[in-house]
Length: 90
Image (tube, rainbow, N blue to C red; front, side):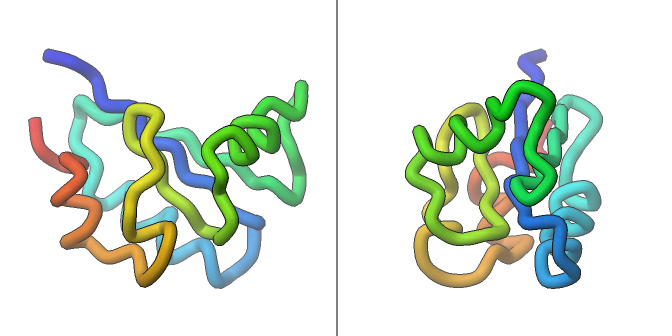
């Protein structure tokens, strides 16, 4: 079974928290969830560089196996959009 890597990019604000909670709720045991707070940054600043490489222009943003979800480019991040991206499926 392949482990799905889910990365959530946030600004650490209350508006982003429901998305973090939703991803954690929908994720299955074969999902690895990593949350990046871009306001705090990372030890080596790699999360900000990664956000730039992925052309993330809106927060929160969800990336599954290295691909920014379409719902993060325009529109809301919903449970339906997360499940359509394969989050929560074994």
